[in-house]
Image 1 (cartoon, rainbow, N blue to C red):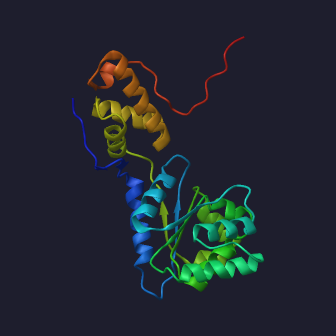
Image 2: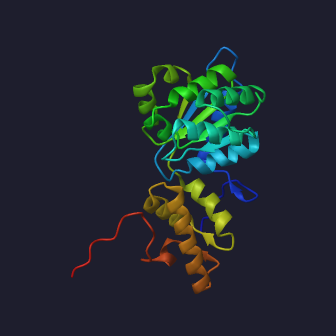
Image 3: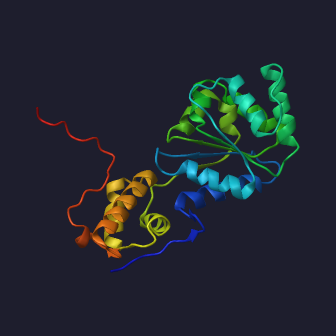
Length: 248
């Protein structure tokens, strides 16, 4: 059985998108002063974008904000001030100024905004641009695959402030190996089964984790310490597809 390895650090698997996102944050933070300081990390649901952002936030002491679908501009600014350790007060304009002042006082700490699609949809992406322009803070926006085109359609000025657009990548066998070592350390999963698992999961991190747990649970029942594709046989793996309608 051929087991492959990938780096795992403590309780965190260093996945492809963790590395890509960390590199983006580093480029934005170390850019020359005359260059814009917004980065965009975009990709399909399940690629591990939020996982990557939280990992980078811990390493860089970044401010981190996950936008809700129902958030208005006022709600966004209030939550940002809370994240910045400031008391939200006054009008929306007053709170934006408070946020700019707070961000400007900590230039070494980037601001990561997750689920940024909602900001664009609700029409206050220009507020993000204002925060960037007036504070000089590096800002990284995270969103779905079409986030770049949404920003371009709504705000050319924000689009022009983007230093780098980085697409999240589907998970590969190295990522699956790292996750298997993290979540099923007592089971040696063969390369052929990992390849099958990645294909079934469509490169989605969440689905890969579900399938690793299926393998771990089955290994516990069967008393396996190792398993490859032949041993796994015809047992089902989760693909995310809805079940077919049953006949009446």
